[in-house]
Length: 299
Ligand SMILES: Nc1ccn([C@@H]2O[C@H](COP(=O)(O)OP(=O)(O)OP(=O)(O)O)[C@@H](O)[C@H]2O)c(=O)n1
Ligand SMILES: C[C@](O)(CO)[C@H](O)COP(=O)(O)O
Image (cartoon, rainbow, N blue to C red; front, top):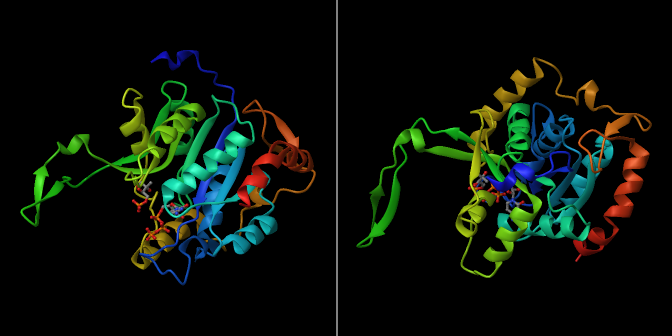
């Protein structure tokens, strides 16, 4: 655990991955744009990080299908921490790689804390976000996860049919959730190593670290049943129930806390988790710092 020397007062950047095509949901109705509780799913996810005072910056990863709408939603809401919207790639891993490239181009410090989140997990708890940020003071990687209540079966194909290969002890099995959090240099290094392997198609970022940096322990941070990933249409009624509970019978409109005015101070990009800037200053800083990355994102 040589991480004890790592700085704690560093930028905390949330990467919201919204570049998927929702093939299991409805490819003609991008799930990240679907409203639950009257609010688009991608907005719930962005707001989870806007509302956490320790998160300094947010970047949103999109695909061409949703780009214009996501841009409009962000513009309308005026999310002050959103620094850039970049194009993702064909698979989730490509979208993460695009975000890491943009952050490198922007000169993000090596020890920055990067929280990578599925846009389609709209109800992540603040305690899980905080847990990730705290865990990175101890280890270079962390994932939110929820203990499995079912026994998990590892399977394989044998003689043309699927059979059980192994039954791990249930107390050791967890369902991976997001955010998954890393020191920037750790996840960059893992992705560099993985990029040399064209047959590697991980569905999450933790696996990239586990497979390519086996010495880097990944902390497990408490998730929740409500940190649901909206995968198919069948998840929508559950999502509506969670949204209703969150909104406490309200309208589903963004909370007063989100209605940040142009001159209001906000927690913003900087070397500190505690620095404040006005929205204009934050935007100006964004343009300066991310100019290079912005050119790359429009490739
Ligand atoms: N090329 C991709 C694929 C996925 N994602 C994001 O990764 C998260 C988790 O992915 P998943 O639920 O699998 O979403 P989709 O890839 O959209 O769904 P499907 O696999 O059914 O196509 C989502 O927020 C999705 O937008 C992404 O940014 N870029
Ligand atoms: C990252 C993830 O949310 C962890 O549960 C998940 O792996 C993402 O996508 P999937 O393709 O639906 O597994």
